[in-house]
Length: 469
Image (cartoon, rainbow, N blue to C red):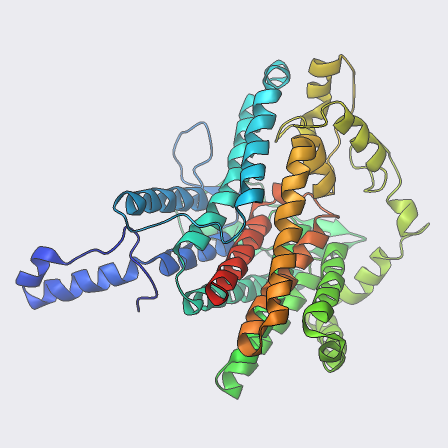
């Protein structure tokens, strides 16, 4: 099935047309598979099913040769070839400004802090972090530049939701058995080398599912992003049976997200409800409130202890606000406690920040810059992390891209009707959820969930461009 252009533009069969019929069929099928939507689906599968920073190909290089990195590089190369052959044009789907600011901020921060980074001997970490950061923008541009129809957008949404449902099922299995299926892929794929020590995350004596993510919070965020697209697929399904399957997928994804026992998931769901009220109106939400009660009940049985544990996490001893104010300026400090020390470090380099990959090593960098002995802080707040690492320029770029995209999608959805409104609205709601999640974890440090966000944003903004040329 051919959903779009070939990876390097139109590929004629040439001499194969004069050959035997069997060869013609083989070449035709091969070229039919080499399309941009199919490549995007493959990328989605790799992102969901091969844990990032956990597996690599056993090749001796200065960096880990991970499957998703190879695939992104291959797609970049294919796009460049296609562009040289005249079969591709670059499109940002209306986001050129923030993308330029983001890329410029990352490079400028590295250049501006070169001496301090060299003195702290963290050059490799800084360059690697910049490459991770730029890969998000590359994936976004690959999607917005190659998808040519709403059907292609929907096909990738389907792959995204199916992948999320599979990961969610694995998370629920992990919750009940304490066995993470994704820690054992090397036994099925011997060409992959497992680089991460298998471990589990507990909070309050309860196992927090991680599945294919780097951390339970990142798992919850990535899965929650896929709930509105799953609901859209259920709404537009051609039969009741298909609608039921997509609705079941949405329920499984929701339960899998909650099995991470992350307060970030609850914050995302609340932000999504507010966004849904803005896009579709409060009456549409009121008609569906029984589904929330059903989800809570089913989650209680599918992942025992999840609901009660989340309640306790929102009501810790001494109160939630008190918990977030402890250990100011120290490793493992609370999110509110980080505000003062974070702003203090930002003031030292307000425009370009201290460079990507240096926040967790700010002690060493601060010594090189100011002659001060400071404690490393890991900011559980991507906005603060961005402010410190990329300065005001980077913060502007992140806020402009994330919330500017939400605004564009929401305004577009309010002008549309029917399934087109549902499509754009669902993706706007997902983006709003990620924007809220960035308040409570350093999102860009977790590659899987951030790639899922940039894919969702690219699909929404590309669909918007196709519907409102």
